[in-house]
Amino acid sequence: MAKKVVATLRTTSGKSFAKVIRMVRSEKTGAYAFKENIIPSELVKDFLAKK
Image 1: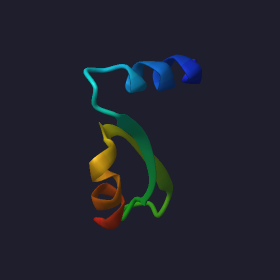
Image 2 (image 1 turned 30 degrees about the vertical axis):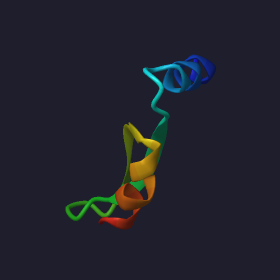
Image 3 (image 1 turned 45 degrees about the vertical axis):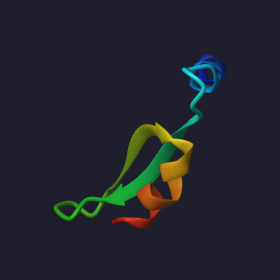
Image 4 (image 1 turned 135 degrees about the vertical axis):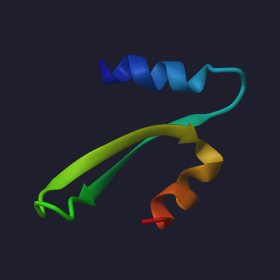
């Protein structure tokens, strides 16, 4: 299934997109959760820099 997602991210209207997965810690329980976003490749560094 991952191959299909990657293939569709490359062919969308000339722009390149990336699927970014970030680990976030819950303030309430202290457990970790994963946030997944599909964003343009130019904004990957900005997405990972913010908390």
